[in-house]
Amino acid sequence: MHGTLEKGGLFAHVSLPSFLQADDIATAGHLNLWRLHGVLTKSKIIVCYVPCDPTGGTFLDYDKMMAGRFSFMASVKTRLYKDYYRIRDIPTTPSLRVTHNLSYVGNSSLSTTLTLNCSDSGKVFANSTYQAVVIDAATRLPAPLPDWWKKKFEWAIIGNKPLFIERIVSRAGSFTYDAKIPWTDLDLFKHINYTAYIRYCYDCAFDAIVNGAYPTFKDRNRLNRVSGIDMSFSRECFPNDILNIATWEDPNDPSTLRFDMTVRGQDAF
View 1 (cartoon, one colour):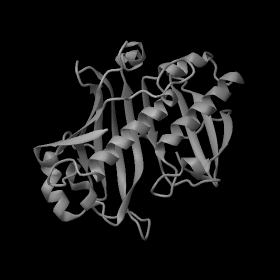
View 2 (view 1 turned 180 degrees about the horizontal axis):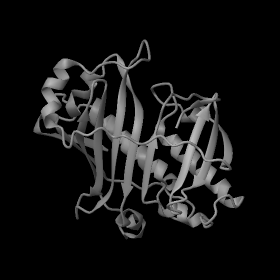
View 3 (view 1 turned 60 degrees about the horizontal axis):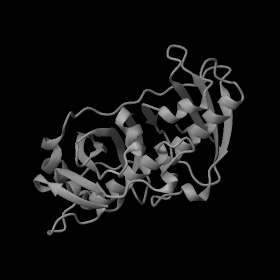
């Protein structure tokens, strides 16, 4: 991967010359969604922390703004398009590109939107919006965004609407599944990386299907054609935590599965 900047760091692009690897492919031959989000996260690290131009610039001066801080993922909204599931059918793996732009700035939070497309044809495979809360590394409490940073970049926001994912509460009679968090899901910020929760949802859903817990969602292969994921996080989780996961089929939309996670009796996801 390598990153480039446009308009003084207001936009960033990351080229992905070799996107597909063995671990990226699910048993049905489709791309694992947690691996996709892992790739998107790596692209964010590259443009935010690795110099992307001769002056040493990064996307939105992110490395300078985050000095002494880290981010907690508050919400994620991802949409996948038909061509995403056709990548594996292309004879030659296409060169892909991730484009980053700023989409919201709050007091201590910001959103960025990432678009994954084909470098040659321009086809859009997926887009994902991430809203993160900036956390003081010492206190692990929310920290306000620096005034100098807001003045420099606030004008370039596209959309300027916070990403709000409504909190849902598990229904009576929901299927339950417990997951012990492994150490391998720990990230650089010393908490569980958000991509791992996608895998926990899949594990829970597979178990629910095997046990006939969903009224109409019976075919496991449908989990390989997901068109969207909405996630909201309320607290950090750590290795050896036990996640208590509840899942149910949305009564108003049987194609939608809902998940609720708690840890130590408190809401987590």
